[in-house]
Image (cartoon, rainbow, N blue to C red; front, top):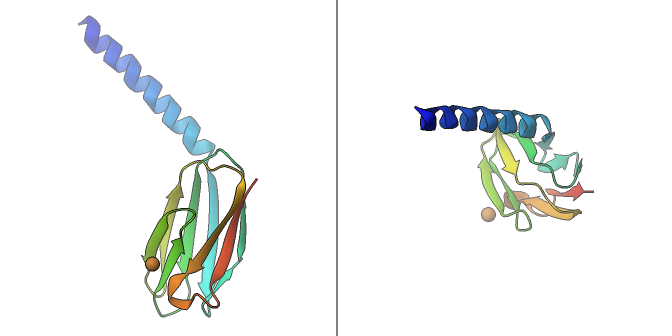
Length: 111
Ligand SMILES: [Cu+2]
């Protein structure tokens, strides 16, 4: 009996922490058009989780890739993906559209 009550308290605490983290999260959006990112520079605060929605407005697929962020995710033509990042240290994190690397370049600036 005693242990189940402790479990309930633990579950309530975990739920509270989860809600606090979600509210503190940074949501960003970027689109791909004519094999270029718009905008090419994203800004986010340090030490907070980040979510980036990548919308591909081109009809051909693209691969959202960043070695610095350890991301490699294909976005189908006229589709979108959501990328979730752990809290990051301040810095400039480059990313590219790997299928059109000459034009699809961008940076996530964490400060
Ligand atoms: Cu790749």
